Every structure is written in structure tokens, then in C-alpha cells.
Image (tube, rainbow, N blue to C red; front, side):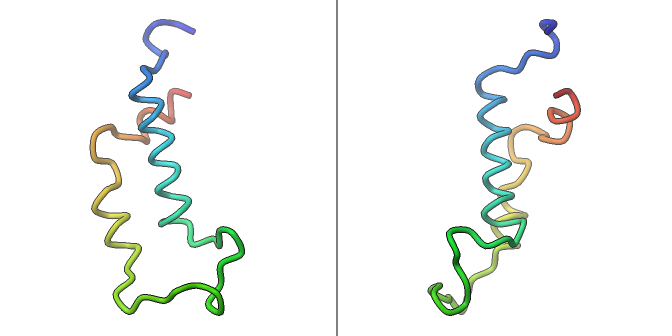
Length: 68
């Protein structure tokens, strides 16, 4: 790998964090067999608010993923 394509530990951690945010808040897929019967439903639960507020805050993830 050349020096330009190597990612710093901070950039690698940001990529991992963005993937985790997408898995938990953006994909909508169930995690740990959670469904409507066994999950604690909040009346004010809004995953789109969290996803829009915290996504792409410090590093543009799409630019980094193109290099990988």
C-alpha cells in the first residue's frame, strides 16, 4: 500500500463507527432476535433523527470507502 492510501487509526475507527451506526440505526434489520413482542417500544423512538444527526460528522465516509 502506498502512503496516500493508508488510513490513520482515527480514520479506521471512524469507518467502523459509521458502519455500526448504519447497522443499529439505518439498516432496519433485527439484531439479537428483537421483534415487536420482545422489544421495549418507546413512543418517541425515531431512528432517522439519530441517523441524520450523527452520520458523516467528522470524516466523509464515502470518500474513504472508495479508496479501500
